[in-house]
Image (cartoon, rainbow, N blue to C red; front, side):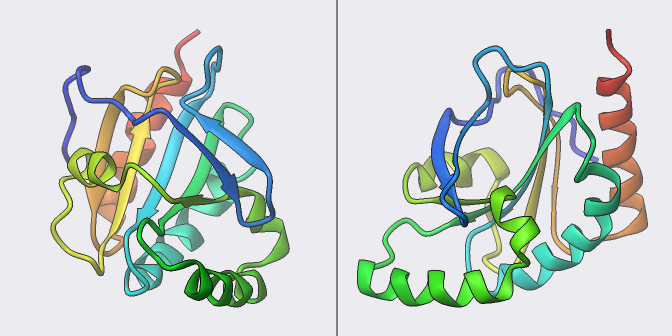
Length: 160
């Protein structure tokens, strides 16, 4: 488990989701914790999908958590991006498209935040409503990592 100092925070992000909804996090006056599942390559989608299957049942409709899957597309040419988005809209279930965030900037900040080391890895972040990172991990899902995540989020959600 990696618990981080309060100095490290989620980069302020304004983006669109796969269905075109505008999102912004961390929220200006948000009271919701953030759970972010970040992928930096097509190869990472396998681990992201595995993590999403584990996390979605517990956090998808949790009203105190903003849960997003985030995909980095900075530098992808626009003609290629159109093809990628077409395929993604067919693959990602419609009910998940509003939680699938498309990043086109700040890749360096996101990679630094997560300690990027492997393109095939999924990167997980738990942050408080202000975007201060409380916990992070990367790689294949495991029961131990999932327990750590639940413990950190549970502690955060128990705060008044």
